[in-house]
Length: 233
Image 1 (tube, rainbow, N blue to C red):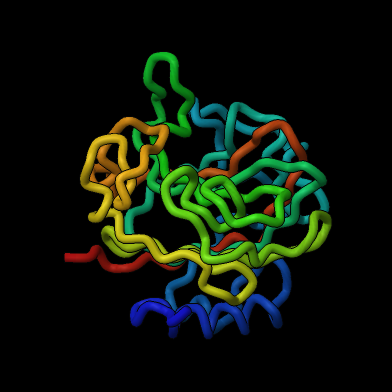
Image 2: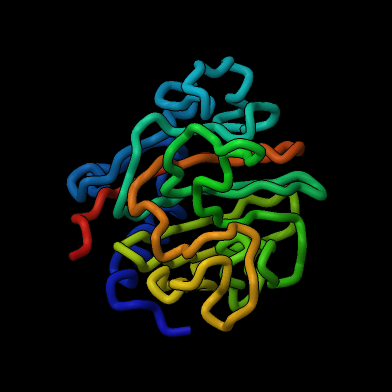
């Protein structure tokens, strides 16, 4: 799959840096280029529950953040709009997790969990490439293929959000490229099939919180880095 024009330079640089650098640190080049370190490898500083409560230190395990168990997801305290987010993840057998972006607001609607307020990049212990498999925009857009390594191995994930465009890269391969403006019908995907959210995804907020989902299984995240981008026109 051809990489979108706005994504290729960031992916090339970041893939090489992620392979060569030390865990949970920014290189001098990353600092110069405007990258931010969202997890220091030792504390939960900067993270909270969706109800804005502090997190116990037990979520830090061997230099990684494990969102299990918590109140649905570990939430970074600073909302973000357009950005490149890069991280490494490892899951346990039969794990169901995901990375939430643009979650807004954090106050859940009656009868719904806070996940309905965000967009989720799915991470699951599967080998298929459907709406709920690794690299999918959960229940909205399938990945081109499942590029994840088996449970127990580290993977690299890069997400780029620019206005309505969301691009998902797993282990150096672009597996999903989504234009939210195409999701302009209530409860429908662009191909006319239904999704679970009951809204027009085009209208989803373009800024919100990043979260690491707890869905009942152990999983680990490290090297969580973000580069803010200028807002798209």
